[in-house]
Length: 141
Image (tube, rainbow, N blue to C red; front, side):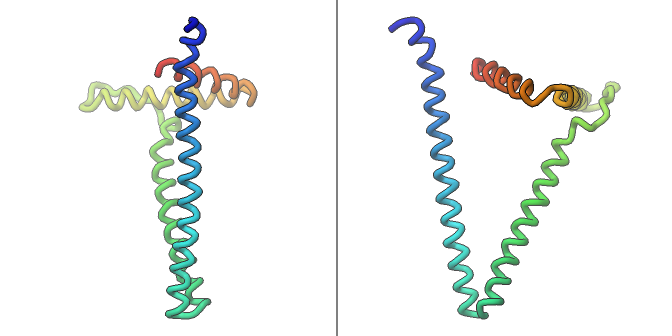
């Protein structure tokens, strides 16, 4: 086995595994969507037999409406926690839990710096930076 073949074997294996994981994930999502469609049809047919077509459609659409509201509320709450870049960086002052505050301040400063950098770069420069960052992160694995 040549040196070049030995060096490229591990990245190829990782790429193959990542590709397989992506394909299986897409297939799982497609089958899940088909399953959701059949479950919706079954629920509609059940409610239609009990209450009629119009009421059945309203009940099924109302159920999806409440599920979508729950997801939107969850996304809003999760987004609120990720807004650390807008926080003011403060000195912990030796208070209890100072390490956690200091770490939060560091994350907020890094996010703010990244946001400023993203505003100054062109989309092509951002894409090159993302590719290089992904390569560097992949080399650490």
